Image 1: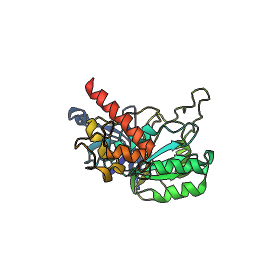
Image 2: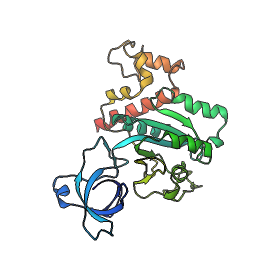
Image 3: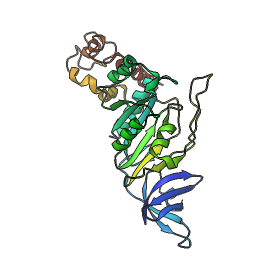
Image 4: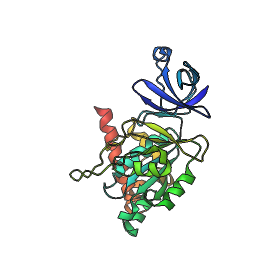
Length: 295
């Protein structure tokens, strides 16, 4: 039988087999010998190892992956919805860029959901959307409490696996409950002292979306710190599409777009043609990568 791993806990893998149910499985020892670790999202072959009335099996093969991520740990992602709150907690936009870059490196289409739009005024909402208009991600201002918004998001979900990611406390669990009522996830409260979210998701798990064939949402453990993936600092600008029209127009051919005189990108950011927020994030991430390689 062929199915998809929807959860892995304590050495057990739970495999959803269409029209048969969810099987509790062990992975064969040969995977450890081959250095293969089954991941949530993997399509696998299993064999039943108990009475036909018991949904217990053994994973015999991990089928080829289209992609895999380390954080969140998932395979075969078809899209990512990255959730950030406009307020409570305030959005960490450098973290937003790091998420987008990680997904872009795996060619995973990104939808950026700025949640809690009810806490922001029209000018504030426009500022968030304008900053990411040319980032390569689809950007939406939403409220997880609004049925019209959640219906729109439901309609957007592609077949396959969509990662739902973002820091704690931004409304991921509320959104997941609206899209997959059977998930019944605990919603977190915001710590009054730190203004950061309390973690409510302990492991990565897929939830099947009713009414859509082979469509899952992957809820991931919330976190509030994240770094851009390892790469040469000079490669970072390739992940900022808004820079593309200015490439080749700088005074220096090897311009880093950070400090050099005659930099067309820096001038465009100063003039408002490139988002000052995105440009500031780029410069900060560039320095982070430079210092990381140095030490």
